[in-house]
Image (cartoon, rainbow, N blue to C red):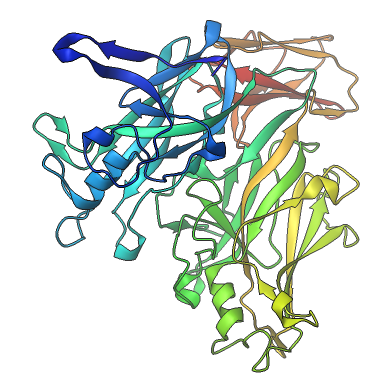
Length: 506
């Protein structure tokens, strides 16, 4: 790949065979079963008509000269060999789901961060190439197309290691053919303090499992992703229910209508992973780390399955959009308010953008639509100021004396934002230097006036304070227990505040 090195080991014994590592392929045979079709992919289509790589279990690749990069993600799919083995079974491996279809089988790819040629066993991302663990058989799947795998949470590393596991294990190890395919590896070079870097909020770090959801446990609950804080309010009255804010979801059900499928989205799952978020009316999220903050670039939005089918077909509470004739000028509108770092307590009602989740106001009915896939909204091209948070308000043409009849829910995913050096400086009459940066064992803080009573906080990318103290009493901050990634040092008193970004490498 030019800057990446992929080992490919050929063993000359037994007539010669591919022993381990990687192979380059352009084979798209998606029908031939068995190991004779070892290098084909099930999707039968190459991305951009370019070659791809077939990997074996425990394969890895690394950067040249151990240069540190941020692997933002890559595309992954099944080989034809593995796919048809799981789908039908063969002389070595079982049919996934078994004869009844109820066996909770899986085929999982785990990607580990590698730093200084050492695998960090605590820093990894999982992707299921096949998953039959759902209680609903209709949600069982074997991947048969290219799927994007977000790896940005691994931080700056010099390589990746790939491990396959399966529910189908025999006396000699895994029975499922231990092969997978990757393509279009996206990465950027190590942090440069003179220029912005890109952050992604994709919710994958919350690890809620597949086909599940999570909302708050009390009236003051939150979850985090990237550097943003998402309120999720749970009301314990009436047996308990999700009252307001946001809920995490990995539900893939895009067919079941009604309130029982409250946490599904009509796109059939996450934009580029497994986890996304369902929002209620009048929900909002903000940057959790600092008062001044990164700038939101874009966000993915779609309809929930509940709202989609309510508008498409009508239900006991809401009308069918367009009415019986199809001519009713119905709409379902999401108003997006941009929040700046100074919008602490109130929303500026003049700073908004209207996005239609459904629109039947056209004279030509063929233009009417209900959104059924993820759509990207470019926040930075809409607002004329730096947006560090968003608030949402829903409107519908279908209303009653008690309020809006259309189910007041929407789905969001993958928020992209810029992080800048010297992120936060308020009345900065102090000079702060944090070193070494990147760091692996400790961090030191130098200020121009050590006699001044200054406090410090070490904060992770999710907004959690890891340690606090005073600069005068601090010799160094031990960070040996921290995983590879992005952190922030905040130095402040009542009048001044400076925040520095720190990269922790392992």
